[in-house]
Length: 401
Image: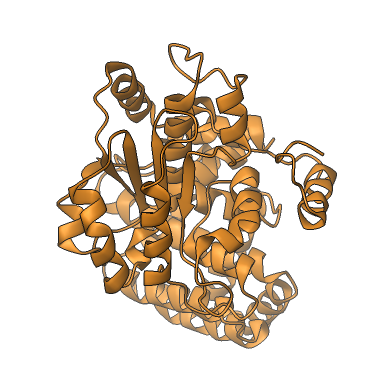
């Protein structure tokens, strides 16, 4: 098998067979066209390459669900492409093929690792390739679950920085740029960050360092000051809606509902689709909950809690997030004359009557109750007890309006 290079071991072969066996999977191919939204940034990065004015150290800053990693990969493929098109890489030349497989010899990756599993990124490259090729929209929690069954805290350590420096001091294999793409640099410990400072201060010719970060709060100021900041904004609703309809094959109503409530975060959107529950079902559950709690019908409240407790944890998490969205939209409808609400047509019809029950007197309590519920579901709380308690709290809150 040659798709991942000449020396494919048994473990890699197994990965390829499993990947091909997954039906209807949307595989990412490192093109700008597959980055959801972000048209202005795409144009800026393409212009940067074509003008030859490429900042040697850049920090792509934004939530993972906004697409920073996907943009960085598309940027690198365009940089290496031997037959660049006006708006994207060709995807067919030898360099593009290598980047697609994440095996270009001049593209180096660095990412957080659980030290008990591996002290350096290289030993986790197979898992990294599998994750990125399947879907580059993932966060640190998703990555840790993939590499460590115990879900221990990952870092980028001094062992990693030594490997990075060694790689970047070597000559380019193909005579062009050498690239380091570091994902989640905020997980660098201080020793690692300090070792990389010199590389950022005195870069070698045709060396590009891309840091793809969620937040700069934990990154040393000396690192930040030596990088060019590229802010990744939220994914706009229209491209999000188009992606969900065309690639995930959901209905227009479901796409509208999800796009309206995830605040431009594609990871949250994909999570909402994760258990394949139609958004109409979430709306139905929400309306039933509000109705039985408003009527103080304890028997029906208990039946509602028992019903949702029988569903999967992922469905329960998505429902709780959906409810939080509906509370926020209700408040916006009340206090902004409906100018800022982001809901589907069906949800808007429901809010016309429901929104008046969500006011400044109870919104804090509602948000806390459902945020706490999500927190405890993630940590495997007993669903029946949690949702029974939630019903009684909702009953109190809704009558405090």
